[in-house]
Amino acid sequence: MLTNTKPGLLLLLLLVFAVNLAETRWETSLHSGSPVSAADYRGAYAVQQLEPSFINFEFHDRTASWAMYAYSISYFALFPALAIAVLIALARRPELAPFRVLCLAVTTDYFVSLPWFLLFPVPERWAYPESNAILLSDNWTSSLIDSIRPISAVNNSFPSTHVSLTVIVIAVCWLFHVRLRTTATALGMMVVAATFVLGIHWLADIIAGVTVGLLSVAIAWRFTDTSERRELALASEFVVMRKRPRPARQLARAGGMQI
Image (cartoon, rainbow, N blue to C red; front, side):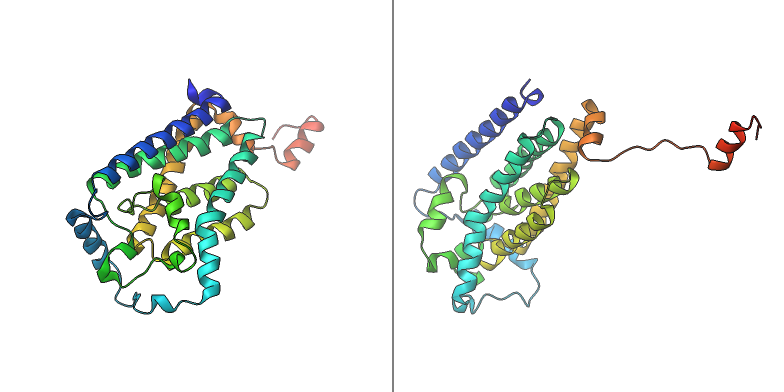
């Protein structure tokens, strides 16, 4: 079974990646004329109505250059670097449980998100003219967004995969006491902020991404906990302490007295 070994779990991740690649290519082929359909615009209108009135991208094009560079690096470079680093850190551990939880959570995340991508298409914020947003990273270079298009269709915005996978990485770091987990959390928050500041994701995408990420970790934990309860406890450094006798009772027993 794929989930019983680390090579098998890596193969599972590759299969998920391949399915995502095929799904994105298929969806893109359906929009040969315009990348955003009428149904996509209806989805964008729906999520826009959920946002508070103070969220306004009217002056988005005036964002400071340093912010544009910092958030672009966070979204396009920091995110994959952080995910790969945690993946390697867990793969190097002798126990299987932490690596299994991460891989199963990522797999669950994709298949929970997939029905939303297909049945409730929402374009990225910048692709909806009424949002007043621009794709901020394009002020640097359009090759950044082009680099992820084969695995991220423009109308697969809800829920945010960037956010959900970042939440999974952070949750696993704390769940299994990964070194530098506080730093990983801070970097992960930068990634989440970048999805909004760059004009890519809606507030609803981000909230849904957080929810899907936490749900995926919970499902992966429960699935693994069923078969590897002891290993999970050891890997998580959760020591189940048995109730010890009170000192007075111990002293009484040593003297032959009964209490």
